[in-house]
Length: 393
Figure (tube, rainbow, N blue to C red):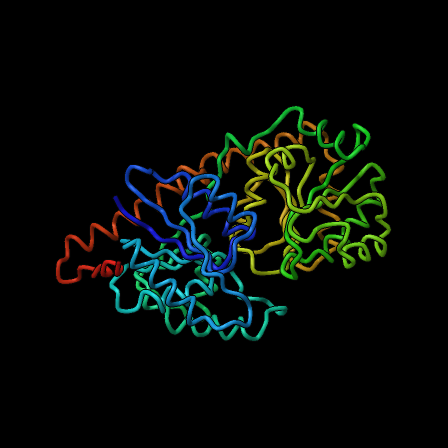
């Protein structure tokens, strides 16, 4: 049995967190034991993983508090679990995991989940953290990147790992699939006419997601297509968000935008759309929502960030970031297509995901990497990784 400890900054519902959840709940339980450690306090997503039988711990770290106690707690958890691999997710976990694993001999693997490191909206401390990690990037045994864009961007930032490993995100194509009645159900939920054109945008409220560009484009589309309505969701995407309400008013979208917040029924929501928009300005590496919508057979308009263009191919339209006029023109173009043409575009997207980005393929790549790390240690006694001592009684 190979024990893998996964250290992640926190467990809000985001791309990295979702991928981690999919991974640890699908790896072969006969060969792997997964332990998840969140640096931050428990969240609803944390509790959801607990309910699914995942062994999970929290270091309880809060902003502004000393991290020494948390570091000692992490070292104690590593001593208790005695992992063969320590897998870190996101920058703060990369740094914290490197400190905790120093001198232990545990193979350390970082996991990069974004491309550009903060864009023009990035915070100074975030940029300092990336520079620090670049200097430490020779410490992990391997660094996983979920996109070519992530590897290229981090190489440009000074990352010089011993080994790059490319593992794209994977998706359950039985869960994310076309659903014949999804559109009818979604329109009924939103109390909209059956002929409404539904344009989706699902992203947490964050500068990198560039909701401003989407609202500007949506305003133009709404003028051209009175039947169009806009369905939005994600952390912070609620009617209580004053910034969103102001953008809705400024772009003449009153009554046309439905803010759903965080939802657990994404397969049904995406399958009910006529099209999906991604308006991110920077930072995306391999956006889950794009591939999930592709698996549901939904045409997409997306900004050219991360590996989105590589993913999308002929199943949608790529536009420049921070270009609302271009985004509006592309959405308007899709709105004007005949239904059979839209279905054909969507089918192409689903085929891409089924051929290249399945959950089984992703899990197999992680399992192979972890197995190879352990086997390599066993076959090279001089380089054998030293296990941590048993915890004191």
